[in-house]
Image (spheres, rainbow, N blue to C red):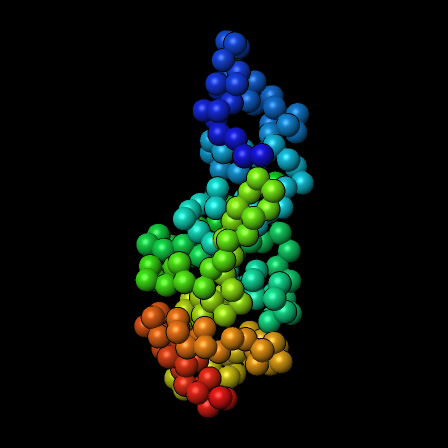
Amino acid sequence: MIVTTQQLQEQYSHLSNKMGRISRDIKNGKLFPLVKGVYETDPNAFAPRLAQFIYGPSYISFDYVLHNRGLIPEAIYHTITCATFNKRKVKTYTNHFGTFIYRDVPKGVFSLGVIAIMDGQYSYQVATPEKALCDKLYTLSPVKNIKELKKLLFEDLRIDEDAFNKLNKEDILKIAPLYRSTNLNLLVKLIGEIK
């Protein structure tokens, strides 16, 4: 369960040294700091559901989703990749649950292609594989043509072509142009060739 310093101070209101008690709870493995002032009580909590409490607004995307949906082979153990907007720099947080990396996508596409997952007391947001691919391509240096995009997709990123072909192309065609990105404009052209 997520708790804040303020909640813990209220819980320990009968004690004279509330912060001392919080420090002891951390040392004794009863509390696990996520970021300053925010803690998780379950040492085995599922890391993705904690991401939005660490930095937000955010949703899980990029390599984490691409790997978990079978698009890329590289497993990024204990690393949760997330999208934000208007932060202007990559933020990285490491804690008991892993490493959480946050990077910007355009504000206009932030809420598109994202689904809410209910997990017990927690709710968190995850990009569809189509959105995660668009997010990933947005963050990479632009390529010049479709031939270079294919190389980027299938050689550099090592995207599985069968998994790529199973993506919902209509979803990509709806959101990709909104990024106003060379890579995503080329992705739209590539999909046009495949269809």
